[in-house]
Length: 298
Ligand code: DGL
Image: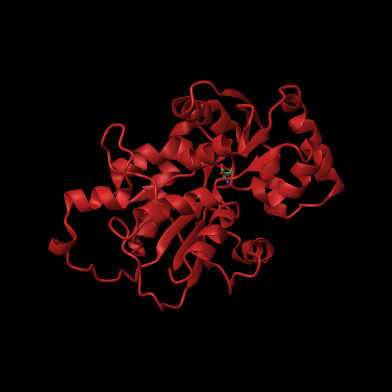
């Protein structure tokens, strides 16, 4: 059953029922399918972890992915710069006629999503709230760890969002700036990666957490290595599937689906190093096709 999304206070009825109250079925004509792709973006390969979940969940929808590889990492930049990059990248996707935007980057979601929503008429989804929801359903103790880029952790976006959803939660967070280059290089199982991960996660180990939010879309690429360091009793949470839930909630009213038998197309744009991106992406896409990423100018 779908969660209620329509803004009645303390509303416990489903979204579908609310929709019927507002708009009786007899008065509604079936909306035409919308064949436009859904735009997904990140600073580099990280957002592919979200794209994978979306492409699997919506097998007839097409997606246009943009990796801003010329300017990665975002997570070391100032809030103002990240906001500007977010709007620029989203504008390129809009110019390619997407029907919705998924900000598959925690840094851009934390610092650019509000400005993006003010800037665009398209539905725009981020990854922070879905990640918090997933963590709150994974934790038993209410002690949650968060790792992310320096900029994401400094923004306090996860803490704020977790406290709003569950005021009794305890949050311990730590920036892990070195994980992004490891993921970009595809060093998922390198001995040096293990050392860096161990050192970076050491501060979290004292906090007795039972769930750890991978608050950067690059980090699920290193999930196995992070799991080895944290141990099997800590649930590693990423937002990819919860983002797919959010997109499903917007369908069919806000984001109209395409034809039920449409053939899925996946297209990739990058701002630099198309060959390198294609090579690394192929490993992260777990079988989803990528021919060759295309260069685009911002
Ligand atoms: N993958 C991104 C995130 O989720 C950004 C990594 C970076 O560019 O620093 O925050």
